[in-house]
Length: 619
Image (cartoon, rainbow, N blue to C red; front, side):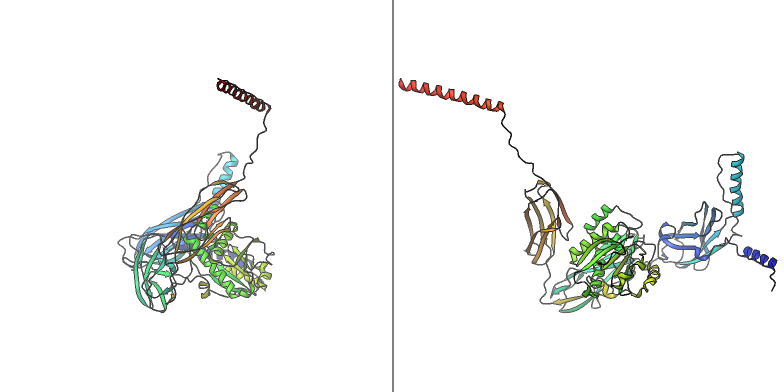
């Protein structure tokens, strides 16, 4: 068969003309409702419901439009009302010289007070308006002018074509205007907790929940608390944009037996996952657990390790400041502490026969370097406050995990293929993702195929009950019996040390106050100095009673001493210095002469006095 090359060449030319290489692919164009834009494809999405007077922000971004070291894109936004009338629009022109190929912008629109309630449509266009031939000629003009000596420097002008003939791509979005309704899922409600989970007959209780506004607009929600299906308390909660608030509800005295207490709210998500909230970022995706060979891989998409100390991709705080955040009460620290404790407890309970010596934890090489400071401190707090049998083994390479049970990787994608032996002997890999913009689930699944795949992936319900009971949606069970008493609630304050600097061997006085804000009872009071217990005593206090506790501690070596009351955040520091030896000066010859002279004078005076006394007596 003879090939007509002229025909083939003509066909290719026609195809190029009909489908120019500059045409934008639909997958290259992204548009979304947002609250904030940080960079290309890095933005915080927003729900698509607005009230008259609201400001609307749209993210628009396109790639693969740079040709010949230049790009020209026109973003066009057209808004149509429920009757398909065009009510507003906006055009943004982007002109690029250089090799930048990720072009984006934020387009702001106003939801007019005159707009009727209903469903609106947005047509978003990205036009590739670059005239590459003319722009290339401009590059050549600069070259020839410089060669000919007509000038020292000429800036490049990007030439464009009309949008009428430019290739484009269009995407449609819809949004709703509602004058008098609340915004759906504007709030998240999480971390329900009681002052007591077991109560005597006739005792009331208090349920506390945390409420967070996920949007940058003010809003309100009505939260109801139900006991055995009956509403016992409800409150209207109003929060500013991104505000977080703790809300308390009264639980009346309950009859003997087991009672189910639930939380309900119309425009809220009631979450079992505890979120990490850093300014306008809210990490609140579900934990995923699955099998790899004989081991387990657990994916934490919520930035628990770094987020616990207020560190994220957007806000990189100083690590020293972050470590101080870990020691002070904070929403993020509490969330991370509880969820990681639950995950470790879940691991322990699932295969406790393998952890007779406790759980040995290491940080994998390649993790975010800040995790090397944060993770050991976070595990120390977890061990101290929950009694978890956790031992931290430090930063480890992939081939040095023989004495490690659980490996943390703080980042999106560890080198799973290097962990075959670790998984074969039942090891657990925890991947903690600090990247808000990226969900690593798909990439982890692909990477795990090199070792047989990540199988039976799910979110086990029992992971939320393995130590802390967190799920407010399905309810919290409370037992009421005759025998159980409400425990004392001890508050510690006014920790002080009488000397900031002392000497080795000299005691310092440590004092603090405790107050019982619960029922009468006993509590173990403990004080640590440099991590060792130096004071421990069981103290009984009546309800409302306050007591001053003090003791002396004698430092034995030179250095700094850190005094802390575990679980309270109260910390003081003092310093001990070595004693300066006292030396007796050697008497000099001058001092010996002086002492001899004094002796002679005194002797002469005494002798004269005796002679005079004798004369007087004789007379």
